Image 1 (tube, rainbow, N blue to C red):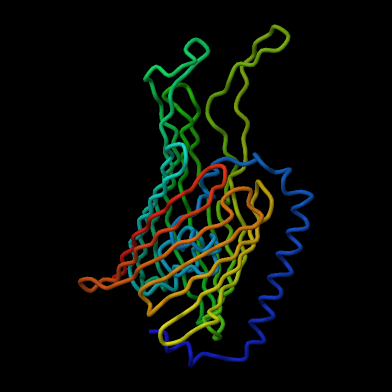
Image 2 (image 1 turned 90 degrees about the horizontal axis):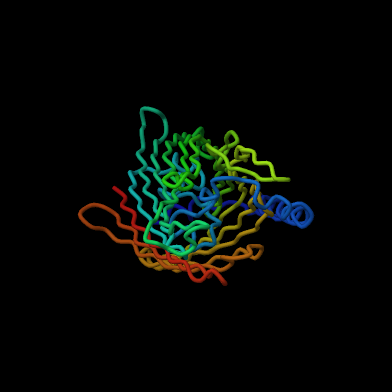
Length: 342
């Protein structure tokens, strides 16, 4: 299945220089983040946009922007859609602490008439909270929902045999408990991404900028009391939780029974310090995979691991993946994904 890689091997010098440049850029960003990064915490809205999609990607430490070779590329890097030669349907379920559920459904379709591919993604975050007030500080059985919703479309095109470009647009909605007077946000955001290939051990260098859009402002406001005077204050607007990601992936091991994929990624979020992520995936006979990832600068969710199974059924390729993330004080987070390729 991977025999074509052997025919593409070239001088590794170019790839090595790209990796060195990437590491230098990440190191420079890390130094800057020590002074500036933490000052941006809490300055963005719709932070559910930063929750990783796909057990495979999360099992590799979320360093997936330079991999981008399954349906979750719609979330991580829209340019990867151009390289998918078959249709993919993907669903992911994540159980977060405090009874918070995160779900995603993604569909990709190659469209030769358009010179690329099209994709659709729907992502939601939802939880139910007890309603309390100053008069009733204890739960009374009355509840309300807090939810986020993303509906987006993606188009990508392979401009030549080494370079691909992708673009996505998405509708965003956040309900901050409108049943009990909370605000609602309706807006949009865009994603752009690129993939650059080198004919050496499936080397990829990718960039993606996700969550680009106008500032968000919840509807409504609150009553402020100062010096005995009450006045109504409108909610302030904030920028979306955009992320610029840059990374590279390579397969240092390619044999008839095993294949190792390694990846490294530098993230520059709009609202927190920079991150340097790394991950690896080891396949055995292209059927069983084990994964691990590390994000040393994260306050929580530093270590992740997982496994995957792949098989054929009725002419379709099935991918079943699981990922575990160590949330430290937050507790463990489990993700389950199913993808069908046909």
